[in-house]
Every structure is written in C-alpha cells, then in structure tokens.
Image (cartoon, rainbow, N blue to C red; front, side, top):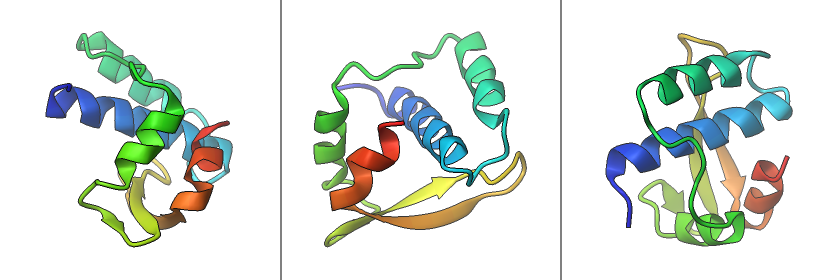
Length: 95
C-alpha cells in the first residue's frame, strides 16, 4: 500500500520514460518531469518489481478487458491516451 499521490508520481515517471523511449514523447521530457517530482521530495522509483506492477494494472480503473488506457505526454503542455494490451504492457515499460 502506498499513497495515491506517490503512486501517481511514480506512474507518471514510468509512463514518460517508456513513451520517450518509444518515440512518443519529446526527448528530455522525462528528465524535466523527474527533476520536478524529485525536487518536491516524492519517491521516483517503485518499490515493487515491474511484473507485480503490470499485474496490479489489471485492477486499475483505466483497464478494460485485455488492455489499459495510458495517458502520456507527447510534449510538455499536451496529453494523449493510448491503449496498451496487457500482453504487451511489460515490454512497453521494460525499456
């Protein structure tokens, strides 16, 4: 169990790191977000292994059947939504 704010901060970082690695987010966005979150004292890395986090994502309110909707930042000031199949979620994050 972790606080909602902590989970959101870590999730934002995970999604931004992965979406930047996949070319969906402008280069340098992850570092800017990381610097901002860490400067406020928030934890920046999850306490659980990626496998457990992907398993927990199946219970997230944004999941639907075999996929989850992830909100990502193409560039600062913009947001977009993508659907990722649970079968591909681990590979998406494991970059």
